[in-house]
Every structure is written in C-alpha cells, then in structure tokens.
Image (tube, rainbow, N blue to C red; front, side, top):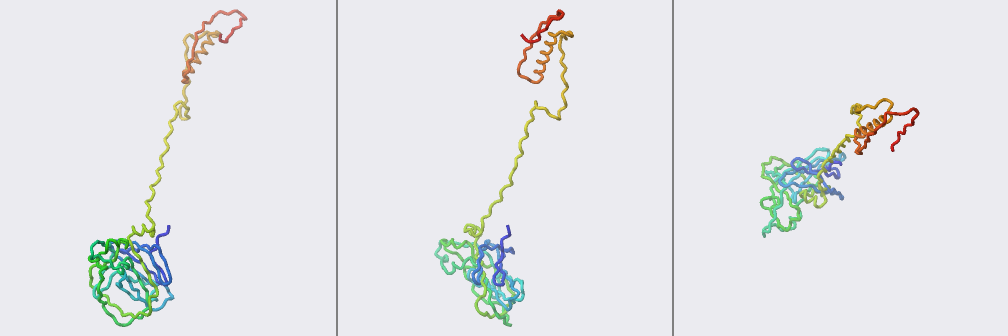
Length: 307
C-alpha cells in the first residue's frame, strides 16, 4: 500500500504542515477552482509549522504567502516565483519585535457564563489557511507590526461553552514571547489571492470517528501451526530396521522313531501348537496325545486322517 500523501499541490505551489518536524498526512483532499482543502490530525501540546514552495518553472513575478490560524493572520513571507523549489517556513506569529511559536492545544470547555459563545470566533477554530497573492516588493524595511493577540490564541484565557464540544477539541495557541530580529520588506498587494490552501485540523480520534482517517487495525497474530502427533508404531508390525529374528528351534521330548507315521503326526501337531503360541494367536490349540502302535504288518494301509 503506498504511503499517505503529506502535501497539497495546486496552481504551481506545494504546501504542507509539519508537527514537531514531521510532515502530517493529508486526508480527504479536494480542489475547487483556486482552492485546495484537506484534513490533518492535530496533536495537542505539540508545535507545528507551515511550509510552502513554488514548483512551476514557467511562473514569473513576486508573490506573498500569508498564514492564518483559526481566522487570524499570524505571519507572511514573500518569494520570487523563479526560485523554484525554494521552501519557506512559518512557525511563529510575529507580533512587533517578538515572535511566538505555534502550538496545537486542547480546547477548554466550561458551563461558566464567561465561556465564549461567539459563533464568529467558534466557527473559525480548527483551520489553518495559506493564501498566495501577487505582490510588488518595495525597498522599505521594518521590524513588524504590533497587533493585539485575540483571546482564542491565548491558551490560558480561552474557554468555550461545554455545549460546543462538536467543535473538535483542539485550537491553536501561541507560545512564550521571544525576541525577534527579523526585518521585513514592505509589499504591495496586487489583487486578491490567486490560490488558497486550507488545512482543517482535528484530533485523530475524531477524524477516525468521522471516517476521514481509516481506523487502524491491529495486525493479525501469526498462524501457529501445530505439528501433527507422531503415530505410535505397532509393535507387532514388521520393521525393516529390525534385525531378523532367529528361527526358534523346537525340541520335543520323546523323539519319534524314524518311519513311525503316528509319531510323526503327533510331532506335526505339537509344532503347529508351538507356532500358534509364537505368533500370539489367542486361539487355544488342543493337542491330543496319540498312542501309536509300533507294530505293522507288511502291506498294511495306514489311515492318517482324524477320527
């Protein structure tokens, strides 16, 4: 499965958001006219930054990328379109001579009467927007404009009514002030934004619940193949590896005299009985003792069948 895309590309500009230096995957990407939108998973307590670069080699002129978070402009930077693949990064809100880092934060809710209920403010939460506008850069330089930070960018003061949980649970706050030595160029905007990129952020769990981000499934455990039990070898079955058994010699008491048919018959019966015992035959063999006469007359016919 191919990796999830992490950038929006539209009309000659590529844009992405990084959280703690890691590009965030984009979901539900849509482009309509000059606007591109997507969803990203925000992580409360972590800083983020917006990155963009021109990628159209045929584009000429000077442009400005302005970043808005939760409906408020926080910083911008101009660039020459001929600087293809030159990346610009905005990670702080510039307020006069100080800069403040951008953070995702958990939204505080309360049933207090002082909780914010202003729909104009609430409707702007959960949104990071970058606009690209054609500009003319002037020679003048300045430090930065002073502006009042709105309450919804101040994590210690901003609280919304608990009935507004549907907002998504996160908003953007500004970090501690740091001294800024950035010098800015004066730019003169020529018309309205040519392109707008909108990153709508929510906690990952909410995006999964809304089927915007696929649910992560735990990998199936590896199949355990049980070895088949070994069959016990029948001790009575012959085995080629077994050494051949020596033939058992049978000795009979009272060896019959040579030429005595009745005695030979008795010996045969005894040998058969012994053989049955040797083969483990459960059937009992009855051995009858035969009293044979040792006296015969010449020409006498001997009947060897049983009575």
